[in-house]
Amino acid sequence: MNIASRTSAPGWFKVAAIVAIIWNAFGVAMYLSSVGVFGDPTQGMGEAERAAASSIPGWITGAFAIGTFAGLIGSLGLLLRKAWAQPVLIVSLLALLVLEGWIVFFSGALEHFGLAVPILVSTGALLLAWLANRAGKQGWLE
Image 1 (cartoon, one colour):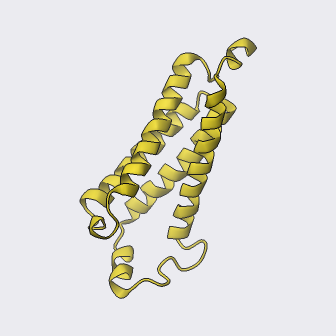
Image 2 (spheres, rainbow, N blue to C red):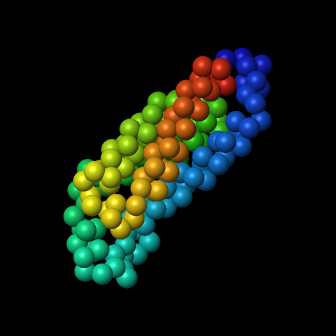
């Protein structure tokens, strides 16, 4: 892409990319917290909650990691207006759909936590993948 096409992105695009970075940085912090980087993630939980937390399959933890880190990296790519942001954000979306699908259909957590977070996370990832796709088609990415 030439310099003229790089300047054609609307102003809201940069704001959206910055919001996406903040959103995904929060997701990465939640992931790191869930695996114990910031201390015992089960501290303060009752016995039943600890059992539920310890029963989370490793592949779900992996989907959480891939979804959040890819989301953060892809959002940085959007801010930098790089074409590689599009496939990275699609990977993030797919990983987060696996995670949220497991939470909704298999974990039993809905009784305690409801649908709000799975819907919010899935919608956010879907919107970012859509934004990256639109940015690619509009020539805002190089």
